[in-house]
Length: 331
Ligand code: CUA
Image (cartoon, rainbow, N blue to C red; front, side):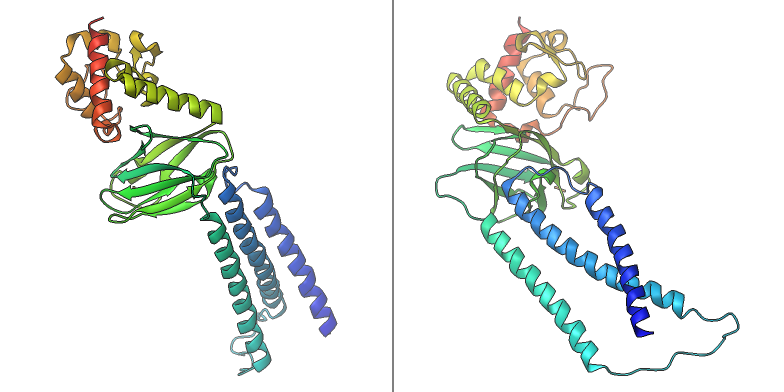
Protein backbone atom coordinates (compact mmCIF):
# COMPACT_ATOMS: atom_id res chain seq x y z
CA UNK A 1 0.00 0.00 0.00
CA UNK A 2 2.68 2.47 1.11
CA UNK A 3 5.02 1.28 -1.64
CA UNK A 4 2.23 1.73 -4.19
CA UNK A 5 1.71 5.30 -2.98
CA UNK A 6 5.37 6.18 -3.33
CA UNK A 7 5.55 4.71 -6.85
CA UNK A 8 2.46 6.68 -7.92
CA UNK A 9 3.88 9.91 -6.45
CA UNK A 10 7.24 9.37 -8.16
CA UNK A 11 5.58 8.70 -11.53
CA UNK A 12 3.44 11.85 -11.20
CA UNK A 13 6.47 13.89 -10.11
CA UNK A 14 8.53 12.71 -13.07
CA UNK A 15 5.74 13.56 -15.54
CA UNK A 16 5.18 17.06 -14.07
CA UNK A 17 8.95 17.64 -13.84
CA UNK A 18 9.51 16.59 -17.45
CA UNK A 19 6.70 18.81 -18.77
CA UNK A 20 7.80 21.89 -16.82
CA UNK A 21 11.45 21.30 -17.78
CA UNK A 22 10.40 21.31 -21.45
CA UNK A 23 8.67 24.67 -20.89
CA UNK A 24 11.77 26.06 -19.14
CA UNK A 25 14.31 24.82 -21.68
CA UNK A 26 12.58 24.97 -25.06
CA UNK A 27 10.85 28.34 -24.83
CA UNK A 28 13.40 31.13 -25.33
CA UNK A 29 12.48 33.24 -22.31
CA UNK A 30 15.50 35.50 -22.56
CA UNK A 31 17.12 37.20 -25.56
CA UNK A 32 20.50 35.90 -26.66
CA UNK A 33 23.26 36.55 -24.15
CA UNK A 34 25.52 39.53 -24.97
CA UNK A 35 27.86 40.12 -22.00
CA UNK A 36 30.32 38.31 -19.76
CA UNK A 37 28.50 39.45 -16.59
CA UNK A 38 25.19 38.27 -18.06
CA UNK A 39 26.52 34.70 -18.29
CA UNK A 40 26.94 34.61 -14.50
CA UNK A 41 23.48 36.08 -14.00
CA UNK A 42 22.04 33.37 -16.25
CA UNK A 43 23.77 30.78 -14.02
CA UNK A 44 21.90 32.15 -10.98
CA UNK A 45 18.72 32.12 -13.02
CA UNK A 46 19.22 28.46 -13.94
CA UNK A 47 20.11 27.48 -10.36
CA UNK A 48 16.85 28.97 -9.07
CA UNK A 49 14.90 27.53 -12.02
CA UNK A 50 16.16 23.99 -11.31
CA UNK A 51 15.32 24.30 -7.61
CA UNK A 52 11.86 25.65 -8.49
CA UNK A 53 11.24 22.81 -10.96
CA UNK A 54 12.11 20.21 -8.31
CA UNK A 55 9.84 21.77 -5.68
CA UNK A 56 7.03 22.35 -8.17
CA UNK A 57 7.16 18.68 -9.27
CA UNK A 58 7.00 17.52 -5.66
CA UNK A 59 4.07 19.78 -4.73
CA UNK A 60 2.17 19.17 -7.98
CA UNK A 61 2.57 15.38 -7.69
CA UNK A 62 1.27 15.38 -4.11
CA UNK A 63 -1.61 17.71 -5.03
CA UNK A 64 -2.72 15.69 -8.04
CA UNK A 65 -2.50 12.46 -6.05
CA UNK A 66 -4.55 13.86 -3.17
CA UNK A 67 -7.18 15.43 -5.42
CA UNK A 68 -7.75 12.17 -7.30
CA UNK A 69 -7.39 9.74 -4.39
CA UNK A 70 -9.41 11.57 -1.73
CA UNK A 71 -12.12 13.02 -3.91
CA UNK A 72 -15.40 13.20 -1.93
CA UNK A 73 -18.04 10.69 -2.93
CA UNK A 74 -21.15 12.25 -4.46
CA UNK A 75 -23.24 11.25 -1.44
CA UNK A 76 -20.64 12.46 1.10
CA UNK A 77 -22.00 15.75 2.41
CA UNK A 78 -20.48 16.36 5.80
CA UNK A 79 -17.59 14.03 6.60
CA UNK A 80 -14.41 15.99 7.31
CA UNK A 81 -10.93 14.53 7.45
CA UNK A 82 -9.40 13.59 10.80
CA UNK A 83 -7.75 16.63 12.43
CA UNK A 84 -3.99 16.15 12.74
CA UNK A 85 -1.84 18.37 14.94
CA UNK A 86 1.93 18.51 15.21
CA UNK A 87 4.55 16.41 13.41
CA UNK A 88 8.00 17.41 14.57
CA UNK A 89 9.83 15.47 11.88
CA UNK A 90 7.83 17.10 9.09
CA UNK A 91 8.23 20.58 10.56
CA UNK A 92 11.99 20.22 10.91
CA UNK A 93 12.12 18.96 7.30
CA UNK A 94 10.15 21.80 5.75
CA UNK A 95 12.02 24.42 7.73
CA UNK A 96 15.50 23.04 7.10
CA UNK A 97 15.14 22.39 3.35
CA UNK A 98 13.94 25.89 2.31
CA UNK A 99 16.44 27.52 4.71
CA UNK A 100 19.28 25.57 3.09
CA UNK A 101 18.10 26.36 -0.44
CA UNK A 102 17.69 30.08 0.24
CA UNK A 103 21.15 30.19 1.85
CA UNK A 104 22.71 28.44 -1.16
CA UNK A 105 21.04 30.91 -3.57
CA UNK A 106 22.14 33.89 -1.43
CA UNK A 107 25.78 32.76 -1.27
CA UNK A 108 25.90 31.93 -4.97
CA UNK A 109 24.33 35.30 -5.90
CA UNK A 110 26.80 37.09 -3.61
CA UNK A 111 29.73 35.44 -5.38
CA UNK A 112 28.29 36.43 -8.78
CA UNK A 113 27.78 40.05 -7.68
CA UNK A 114 31.35 40.33 -6.37
CA UNK A 115 32.75 38.86 -9.60
CA UNK A 116 30.57 41.10 -11.77
CA UNK A 117 31.72 44.24 -9.95
CA UNK A 118 35.43 43.58 -10.40
CA UNK A 119 36.91 46.34 -12.52
CA UNK A 120 40.53 46.79 -13.61
CA UNK A 121 42.04 50.13 -12.52
CA UNK A 122 42.68 51.02 -16.15
CA UNK A 123 39.28 51.06 -17.83
CA UNK A 124 37.07 53.13 -20.07
CA UNK A 125 34.32 55.20 -18.43
CA UNK A 126 31.24 56.53 -20.19
CA UNK A 127 28.84 58.89 -18.42
CA UNK A 128 25.15 58.13 -18.68
CA UNK A 129 22.55 60.78 -17.93
CA UNK A 130 18.93 59.75 -17.45
CA UNK A 131 16.11 62.26 -17.61
CA UNK A 132 12.42 62.23 -18.39
CA UNK A 133 12.39 60.70 -21.01
CA UNK A 134 15.74 60.18 -22.67
CA UNK A 135 19.20 58.77 -22.21
CA UNK A 136 22.36 60.74 -23.02
CA UNK A 137 25.88 59.33 -23.21
CA UNK A 138 28.98 61.46 -22.67
CA UNK A 139 32.47 60.32 -23.63
CA UNK A 140 34.77 62.40 -21.39
CA UNK A 141 37.91 61.69 -23.49
CA UNK A 142 36.15 62.77 -26.67
CA UNK A 143 34.06 65.67 -25.35
CA UNK A 144 31.10 64.16 -27.19
CA UNK A 145 27.53 63.59 -26.00
CA UNK A 146 25.22 61.39 -28.03
CA UNK A 147 21.85 59.69 -27.83
CA UNK A 148 23.31 56.36 -29.01
CA UNK A 149 25.54 54.30 -26.70
CA UNK A 150 28.52 53.04 -28.72
CA UNK A 151 30.91 50.62 -27.02
CA UNK A 152 33.74 48.34 -28.14
CA UNK A 153 33.25 44.57 -27.90
CA UNK A 154 35.25 42.48 -25.41
CA UNK A 155 36.30 45.33 -23.12
CA UNK A 156 35.24 45.79 -19.50
CA UNK A 157 33.60 49.21 -19.26
CA UNK A 158 32.26 51.37 -16.49
CA UNK A 159 29.10 53.38 -17.00
CA UNK A 160 28.76 56.22 -14.50
CA UNK A 161 25.05 56.90 -14.26
CA UNK A 162 23.18 59.91 -12.94
CA UNK A 163 19.58 60.99 -13.05
CA UNK A 164 18.46 64.60 -13.40
CA UNK A 165 14.94 64.11 -12.08
CA UNK A 166 13.34 60.86 -10.89
CA UNK A 167 14.40 57.22 -10.55
CA UNK A 168 15.04 55.50 -13.88
CA UNK A 169 16.46 52.05 -14.50
CA UNK A 170 19.09 51.11 -17.06
CA UNK A 171 18.53 47.76 -18.74
CA UNK A 172 19.90 46.18 -21.89
CA UNK A 173 18.16 42.77 -21.97
CA UNK A 174 21.04 41.08 -23.81
CA UNK A 175 23.48 42.25 -21.11
CA UNK A 176 21.18 41.07 -18.29
CA UNK A 177 22.64 43.51 -15.69
CA UNK A 178 20.07 46.06 -14.55
CA UNK A 179 20.71 49.17 -12.47
CA UNK A 180 18.42 51.80 -11.00
CA UNK A 181 19.57 55.37 -11.59
CA UNK A 182 18.71 57.32 -8.45
CA UNK A 183 18.79 61.14 -8.40
CA UNK A 184 21.44 62.63 -6.11
CA UNK A 185 23.77 59.63 -6.39
CA UNK A 186 26.15 58.21 -8.96
CA UNK A 187 25.59 54.57 -9.84
CA UNK A 188 28.25 52.34 -11.33
CA UNK A 189 27.39 49.79 -14.00
CA UNK A 190 30.05 47.39 -15.14
CA UNK A 191 29.71 45.41 -18.34
CA UNK A 192 31.85 43.51 -20.82
CA UNK A 193 29.89 43.29 -24.08
CA UNK A 194 30.63 40.03 -25.90
CA UNK A 195 28.26 40.23 -28.84
CA UNK A 196 28.45 42.62 -31.79
CA UNK A 197 25.29 44.31 -32.94
CA UNK A 198 22.57 46.80 -32.10
CA UNK A 199 20.54 46.29 -28.93
CA UNK A 200 17.74 48.18 -27.19
CA UNK A 201 18.29 50.07 -23.95
CA UNK A 202 15.06 50.15 -21.97
CA UNK A 203 14.07 52.18 -18.92
CA UNK A 204 12.51 49.69 -16.50
CA UNK A 205 11.38 52.01 -13.72
CA UNK A 206 8.00 53.69 -14.14
CA UNK A 207 9.21 57.30 -14.35
CA UNK A 208 6.28 59.27 -15.75
CA UNK A 209 4.00 59.55 -18.75
CA UNK A 210 6.80 59.01 -21.27
CA UNK A 211 8.29 55.99 -19.48
CA UNK A 212 7.39 53.58 -22.28
CA UNK A 213 9.20 55.73 -24.84
CA UNK A 214 12.38 56.07 -22.77
CA UNK A 215 14.50 53.88 -24.97
CA UNK A 216 17.85 54.25 -26.69
CA UNK A 217 20.03 52.29 -29.08
CA UNK A 218 23.17 50.46 -27.99
CA UNK A 219 25.76 49.67 -30.66
CA UNK A 220 28.45 47.16 -29.80
CA UNK A 221 31.24 47.72 -32.34
CA UNK A 222 34.39 45.79 -33.18
CA UNK A 223 37.58 47.30 -31.72
CA UNK A 224 38.54 48.63 -35.16
CA UNK A 225 35.13 50.17 -35.84
CA UNK A 226 35.01 51.73 -32.38
CA UNK A 227 38.47 53.26 -32.78
CA UNK A 228 37.48 54.55 -36.20
CA UNK A 229 34.39 56.19 -34.69
CA UNK A 230 36.54 57.69 -31.91
CA UNK A 231 38.99 59.12 -34.44
CA UNK A 232 36.12 60.62 -36.44
CA UNK A 233 34.71 62.25 -33.30
CA UNK A 234 38.11 63.60 -32.25
CA UNK A 235 38.84 64.89 -35.75
CA UNK A 236 35.45 66.56 -36.02
CA UNK A 237 35.67 68.08 -32.54
CA UNK A 238 39.14 69.46 -33.35
CA UNK A 239 37.95 70.87 -36.66
CA UNK A 240 34.86 72.37 -34.98
CA UNK A 241 32.25 74.32 -36.92
CA UNK A 242 30.47 72.87 -39.90
CA UNK A 243 32.75 69.84 -40.12
CA UNK A 244 31.87 68.83 -36.56
CA UNK A 245 28.24 69.58 -37.41
CA UNK A 246 28.30 67.11 -40.28
CA UNK A 247 29.66 64.49 -37.89
CA UNK A 248 26.90 65.29 -35.38
CA UNK A 249 24.31 64.96 -38.18
CA UNK A 250 25.56 61.42 -38.79
CA UNK A 251 26.10 60.44 -35.15
CA UNK A 252 22.68 61.62 -34.01
CA UNK A 253 21.03 59.68 -36.83
CA UNK A 254 19.42 62.70 -38.58
CA UNK A 255 20.05 61.10 -41.98
CA UNK A 256 17.79 58.17 -41.08
CA UNK A 257 14.78 60.47 -41.52
CA UNK A 258 15.99 63.42 -43.60
CA UNK A 259 17.34 63.77 -47.10
CA UNK A 260 20.35 66.10 -47.25
CA UNK A 261 22.71 66.21 -50.20
CA UNK A 262 25.57 67.72 -48.15
CA UNK A 263 25.52 64.67 -45.84
CA UNK A 264 24.67 62.14 -48.56
CA UNK A 265 21.53 61.05 -46.69
CA UNK A 266 18.28 59.94 -48.31
CA UNK A 267 15.81 59.45 -45.40
CA UNK A 268 12.18 60.13 -46.26
CA UNK A 269 10.39 60.12 -42.89
CA UNK A 270 10.87 63.84 -42.23
CA UNK A 271 11.02 66.90 -44.46
CA UNK A 272 13.59 66.99 -47.28
CA UNK A 273 16.25 69.32 -45.85
CA UNK A 274 17.55 70.25 -49.29
CA UNK A 275 14.12 71.82 -49.88
CA UNK A 276 13.37 73.40 -46.48
CA UNK A 277 16.79 74.62 -45.29
CA UNK A 278 17.27 77.43 -47.87
CA UNK A 279 14.21 79.18 -46.41
CA UNK A 280 15.34 79.00 -42.75
CA UNK A 281 17.53 81.34 -40.68
CA UNK A 282 20.06 79.90 -38.19
CA UNK A 283 17.63 80.68 -35.37
CA UNK A 284 14.80 78.82 -37.11
CA UNK A 285 17.06 75.84 -37.78
CA UNK A 286 18.00 75.74 -34.08
CA UNK A 287 14.36 75.88 -33.04
CA UNK A 288 13.46 73.04 -35.43
CA UNK A 289 16.13 70.84 -33.83
CA UNK A 290 15.43 71.66 -30.18
CA UNK A 291 11.65 72.05 -30.39
CA UNK A 292 10.54 70.26 -33.56
CA UNK A 293 6.82 70.69 -32.82
CA UNK A 294 7.05 74.50 -32.64
CA UNK A 295 6.70 74.94 -36.39
CA UNK A 296 5.83 71.98 -38.57
CA UNK A 297 6.50 71.70 -42.28
CA UNK A 298 3.06 71.35 -43.94
CA UNK A 299 2.18 67.70 -44.47
CA UNK A 300 4.20 66.38 -41.49
CA UNK A 301 2.88 65.16 -38.12
CA UNK A 302 4.00 66.40 -34.68
CA UNK A 303 5.88 64.11 -32.23
CA UNK A 304 7.59 62.08 -34.96
CA UNK A 305 10.97 63.74 -34.50
CA UNK A 306 12.58 63.22 -31.05
CA UNK A 307 11.97 66.23 -28.75
CA UNK A 308 15.19 65.86 -26.79
CA UNK A 309 18.07 66.84 -29.06
CA UNK A 310 18.45 69.99 -26.95
CA UNK A 311 19.41 67.67 -24.09
CA UNK A 312 21.21 64.82 -25.81
CA UNK A 313 23.56 67.08 -27.79
CA UNK A 314 26.15 69.20 -26.01
CA UNK A 315 25.95 72.99 -26.65
CA UNK A 316 29.07 72.78 -28.84
CA UNK A 317 27.56 69.94 -30.86
CA UNK A 318 24.31 71.81 -31.29
CA UNK A 319 26.10 75.01 -32.42
CA UNK A 320 28.16 73.08 -34.95
CA UNK A 321 25.09 71.21 -36.25
CA UNK A 322 23.25 74.51 -36.79
CA UNK A 323 26.31 75.94 -38.54
CA UNK A 324 26.57 72.89 -40.80
CA UNK A 325 22.87 72.94 -41.70
CA UNK A 326 22.85 76.71 -42.32
CA UNK A 327 25.84 76.30 -44.63
CA UNK A 328 24.17 73.34 -46.41
CA UNK A 329 21.03 75.46 -46.91
CA UNK A 330 23.01 78.13 -48.70
CA UNK A 331 24.26 75.45 -51.05
CU1 CUA B 1 12.81 56.47 -17.19
CU2 CUA B 1 11.03 54.88 -17.06
